[in-house]
Length: 446
Ligand SMILES: Cc1ncc(COP(=O)(O)O)c(C=O)c1O
Image: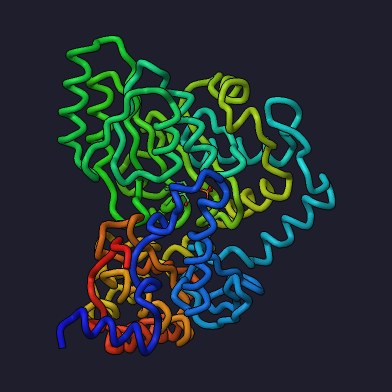
């Protein structure tokens, strides 16, 4: 039987072809005049996938975030299992010290900051957190943002103005890309991690425009591919060409490096990059983000002139208190122990997947990409996983290249070997059951 026939038989037995293949935009009704109705077929397609258990997105947890989780899909269908789908790298989300810190802050300061930081939204806890982060990160000034997304979007858009240039890694996070698109500056996307491609662009821009502003944007650890640029070389290039370097350390700060200062620490670059931004949503058990620079006055300017800082509500006392206590853990002996446990789990998990013949690209980090192939195979394998109690997130085209769907396996310090064994055993079963029973046809409308 050829592959297409196999696929059809899988589809007939199990799920319609249109649910196994294609992407949301195939269902967007662009010819509709009504701007809302254009999207309703997309919703229907996602809901049909959900009913067939082929849509692993928009899940909710029904209890605390722990190495095992009880959750539900958006249609109410429940699941439970080992949890590799949460971003809580040091397992702080249910840590009793953070819960106490949050309760104490609520008791002392109430639950709301009640305004933009540009007006009177700053509070005792947010001021303390900014000061503590300055010390930890080795920067003169840290400015809090309500989320990492607003920090990335806001700082890129604020720094680069129309007439300037932004040189950005093609795989940089959406907040950075959208900030670049929204800035009005000319955007140059360079191949992932290529310092030589950056040099070529910097040299070309500088010889044509000696006085223009240039912002170079990358990440310390790319969460999709789990890899890092050579940051010292990059900063040296930027200095040489009079460009400003901005790096996003969302996924490594707190959970990597001997003292938790992330990839910058591992590369000897703490406090040495022009602009650092980050997020609290991966390791620090809260939402929120920050921008750090070595220049006094940038915080005052950002508060007044950066849209996603000025025109939005400031972090709450509870958010700030939780991150502050998380930072106390990260910088204390418990942080060292948790980082070591996380590193051991990452190494064990990668080894187990490798033994089973899975491809897990990138460097060891809390995110382990596990390649599962084309959309149909990936959706069927993911259904098998969640039914079998191994909860993972699936990343598909267009977030990744066609035919290269992967599970974004997120490791925590509190995972134990039994959780990792349950995950890898289920993955093996899923592959044995579904591999080669579908056909690579991502993005093709059936
Ligand atoms: C690299 C990177 N930057 C920024 C963000 C946004 O962070 P937050 O979740 O705090 O909005 C994310 C989150 O997905 C991210 O992966």
